[in-house]
Length: 176
Image (tube, rainbow, N blue to C red; front, side, top):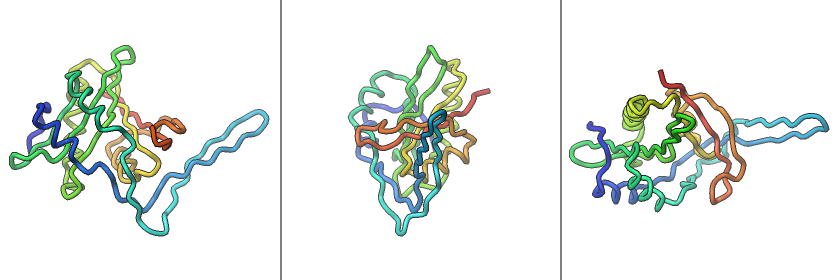
């Protein structure tokens, strides 16, 4: 497998990928408000049957991200793009934000996402960044597990973050 910067030709493949996921768990948010405090918890809930969770972003944004020329990397196997990671840099905070990460469904759970994130970390360190942030919806349990497996720590959420009003969960990893 080769991980390399994306070309314009790769962009169409990335746009055409199925970005949805199949999940049998979700993180359900519970808010408790009292006079002097607010408590928010996320409970792991097993669904009665698997559901397909749609992708919460407009994929047209990928074109703008690619044009910016920052950390847009693809994983290529046998001459075919199998996945990509898209990072947006926030220089003032020295953060690389993983805004999009996708692997073709038939190639998931084969190490492609892990390789993409390893190269993303290397790229971010070369840019002088201090941390990577990643996001996932509460419905994308496979992504939540993936980020946690890679050592990312839950660091917050934003209710109604996405256009479809899904909750975004944020995960951080410090770069050494």
